[in-house]
Length: 338
Image 1: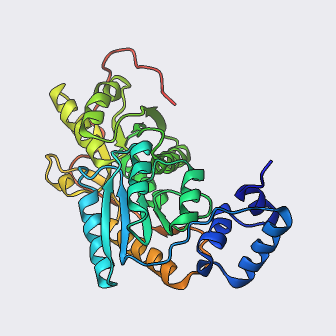
Image 2: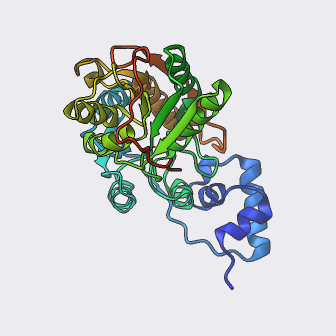
């Protein structure tokens, strides 16, 4: 059988992305590492199919899962502003939170840009590593194969959210999950679990539901049926849909159920009651992602490094309040979902 990149990587003790860069973009690999990888490849009889990039375009690509989500426009502006300050333009693609469309965007964009920034990518890790071997790549709110990454640390913000609810007297809380393909949801849920366990709070996990107002509307009756007095949604849009439908059912927020979102989009302060939410510093993250990618392009250094983490923070508004009653609707709570 033919020797593969994976074979060379395993034998050389480096990532597949490093092997791919050694043959496709050798200027981006440390000289000692490049010599070592080439020697291993020759010994194993590896025959590469290189696709070198000989010219620079002066542009970077940004792929997001949902441009309609109010979370993304401020970030896109931050990325564009930072890129322009370093004499780069940006190409933007919306994957509609679908791995297939994301892959198509990569295929269309990769020959027009010098590097790619993926925000909350839905692609498999091995696919991202393969792409990074051909096009310099930075991930945001996602990790894969040691690729350079900027993440919003879920730990602080989600811990603050649970502690806030606990201080208000809540002992039974729901967490409304995003779809399983959403990497950040896994970490948010884990942080909520840890804090609830530490405080002795009962946690009911529900979903997954779409990260949209419609997803929150769908979740509302199920949240109420579990008799919780508080709910943490995986993002602001889900939280807003949850609040709207609870109101339609005659339930008060926060009188009957307190609601917390995640993102701190501009709509969080426009809805009534104003939404308590975990702030994700999108402008800081967008700027860091651009710097990381452009520094990578300029330095050509090995990039198999740990993630850059940015702290999150709870913003308390009107959608959370002290426990005043317990919801029993219907009278027999539904079983917990995991």
